[in-house]
Length: 252
Image (cartoon, rainbow, N blue to C red; front, side, top):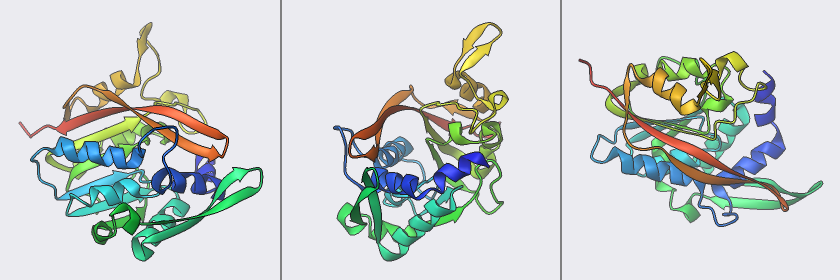
């Protein structure tokens, strides 16, 4: 698949390692950590048993969730991302060449100890997997967190209409996305929103609400979380991810 090649590229991997474990840029807080904080706060007295970080990328959110949850599974489609997650969990340190300018790089080393996450690593497991076709063993979750995932899936409806099967009653589904729909990742007829429907604007939030309605209730108002991905010393992506939190309905 075309989209997988981007995430297997070493330069992209280094950018995402910096995004997860590196410095903060342009005054914005660490986004993977922020997602975990929002999720843990939203649990608000619910069982902190098992969590799934789907589309975990380089794993920071998984480690952060493991400070509160008994067990966290991090799953990503990219083998290179998952390998780095496993290295970080095993060795408690990751090293990478951060792009600076042209072919120039700076060598970076980040440790879980410096982030107060060393102990949490014992409760995290990382796996390569497909969010649209999860293996049967990934089930029984009190929280499913999908951070900047749905607009990179080849068929997001497969994830959105089935994920309730993997969750415990009363569990929470947290979705964050900038809704950057691109045909190189998702065929246009598979977009959740961002198009006209019946002559009216149909947003991704509209699509999420319609797809999730049979099994979920929106828990709180939507909000935006900013994030910055550093590409080089002089080039940054500054984006906003819309955050929605859904509670799985109890059976009637």
